[in-house]
Length: 386
Ligand code: HEM
Image (cartoon, rainbow, N blue to C red):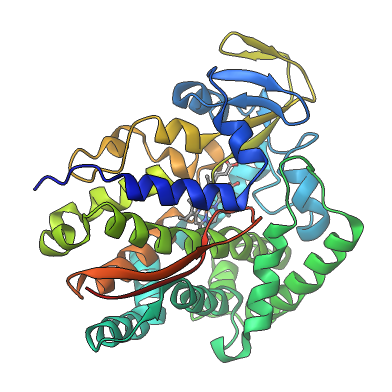
């Protein structure tokens, strides 16, 4: 089937990005050169090949130097939590965690946690209910957090969830460190969750993720740190992506066609990830004199890899053409820091989307873009059966 590109999807995606970053987004978007210095921000890279080459060169471009993730997250999570590590230690921890994310384990984990809720979602929509997809996916995220930290989902109240979400909201492109007050608040919130993870680790057994980490040979500190990183990395990205995918599918006119022909689902998910790019930028610090394309870069400079711009340069959402298939999942990064949670993310996306496609067709009743957040998202997206 062929659906002509519909401008509504691109227009709403633009609004979601602008609402999140009213100052930085227009600035990044206006960049015409594939790589250039932007005063007060760093070296901006918007070309896919240069972006990938930078990610694949951890000797020159690190996550541990000035202005990188380490500056942000080490005060909150401690020194060894993947997102602020490089070199052999990082590789070793990735290896230990590897079998936690094999599709056979994550598919079963996601089905066990979410299958009843997603089946209920289909029934509610078929029954004519209006459903806020953002609230729905937040609920799934809470259930997954409870599994990650080894506590009962009922103990994860809305307030704790809101506080977890607010941590990423502290981060600004123009300010690469958190303030002491923000660090204290983030540590208090994550401390509640990681304390539970420590208990689950000590209890052992494969029924909780921390227990399984213990079986995989992680120390308690490594397991607790990894859980903190997972909670931070997993929550906002999925609460952003699944509603945006639904909006793109409805706005572009593809929803009913994909519901009828499920062979297009994988292309739709990949194209959705390409045009939305939930993690719009990645940051690195220059560790050795080098160059990105024609631009010489110097030790201590900050590099902003604008993945969203590289991804969108390939045109509008089109699951049939699926140009995303040429991008080697750049929206999940590349090289040693490639998203370790990608199989878990894909399992949740597939399950939620399948439940929605089972309804046949959807319409958007109302929506609101989130304002001034790190990960662009809808704060509500209410849908009903079309
Ligand atoms: C649509 C959903 C997601 C997107 C778009 C996404 C995107 C990314 C990207 C772009 C990176 C690389 C960052 C960099 O190189 O600077 C990354 C790393 C990471 N992601 Fe995801 N992610 C998603 C979901 C998840 C989930 C569900 C988890 C749960 C475990 C997760 C855990 C991580 C971790 C721990 C890292 C750091 C890996 C490392 O530094 O070695 N992500 N993610």
